[in-house]
Image 1 (cartoon, rainbow, N blue to C red):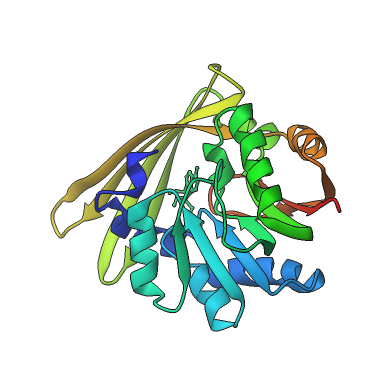
Image 2: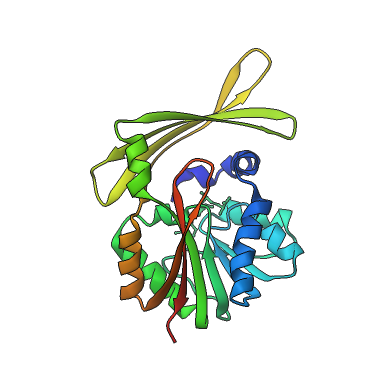
Amino acid sequence: MQSLYSNGFETIYDAMYQTFIDYELEYEFYSSILKKYKKKQILEIGSGTGNLAQHFIKNNYNYSGLDYSIDMVNLSKSKNPKGTFINGDMTNFSLEEPSESIIITGRTTSYLLNNIDIHNTLKSITKNLTKEGLLCFDFIDASRFFKQIKGGVLIEHKAAFNGKNYYRDSFLNTNTSNNFMFNWDSKYYEINKNNSRLIAQDNSEVRAFTKNEWELFLLLNDFELIEFIDKKSYAFDTYVVVAKKMA
Ligand SMILES: C[S@@+](CC[C@H](N)C(=O)[O-])C[C@H]1O[C@@H](n2cnc3c(N)ncnc32)[C@H](O)[C@@H]1O
């Protein structure tokens, strides 16, 4: 698992992502889909530091979050004492009771680096969804995103949170190792009066997808694809998939 989400980095993640992502809008987006399919019970995979969780909990959803990083889980619990947060791996998890809906948020699908992980994740989801349960997740769209980053691009994100200013330099480039992978090398800085201090650094290889790949992964795992939604996102071209577990 990426070091990025543990060992104290979870608090920096938490501060910065609250300025990159409007979690209220994220909540409105996902809750409108859940309302459409009359789902009030939800498991969020890749629940991170619980920023989306707080909106679901406030709005009386029967919410649980699942994340691979114990540090992210512990931070989520401290921010949302009423929430249920589970430390687990999306490729192999078991809930006490199946859920009516499962969402995978914040491009957590990018960490499914090989096809075995994808099939295992969809199998685990099937086991943990009720009959005709809803599956909803986002992914980085390789078809559009790779045109932007081919050859390498540097993207800077600035963020101010709790009186502190931060920025992140991301160097993104495609690679040809396996699937539609790209390298994401990031450096996080805290800006002080006279200088910038490097506070964290991460070099990851992550995955983007085409719509057609997901159509086939879903078909092979007995999910009915309902729709792809083109979703605006702070850095990446993203689609959201809405699918239903076949009865
Ligand atoms: C980019 S963050 C997104 C967090 C959150 N959804 C948000 O939008 O702020 C990705 C999250 O996925 C989690 N993650 C990565 N691989 C995972 C896996 N195999 N199972 C469960 N969670 C995983 C990481 O620990 C991290 O919290």
